[in-house]
Amino acid sequence: MKYFQKKGKQIVLEVANPKYTDFMARTGLRIGGVVTAVVRKYHLLGRDL
Image 1 (cartoon, rainbow, N blue to C red):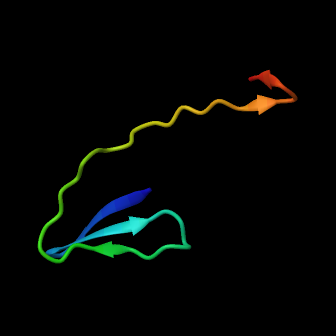
Image 2 (image 1 turned 180 degrees about the vertical axis):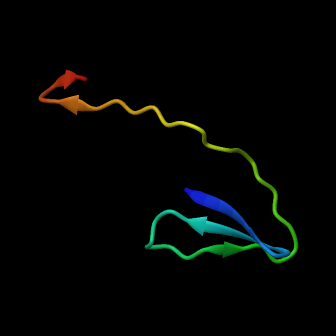
C-alpha cells in the first residue's frame, strides 16, 4: 500500500511497509484504483470467525 503525497510540484507515493522505498514520479503518474476498505476472513481452530 502507498500513500499519495504532493510535495511542491513533485508527486511521491510513500510506502506503508518500511522494507520498501518511496516512489517518485518523474514525468507523470496514473492512478489505477484506490483501496478504501479491506475485508478479511480469519480462521480459528477450524472455525470461521
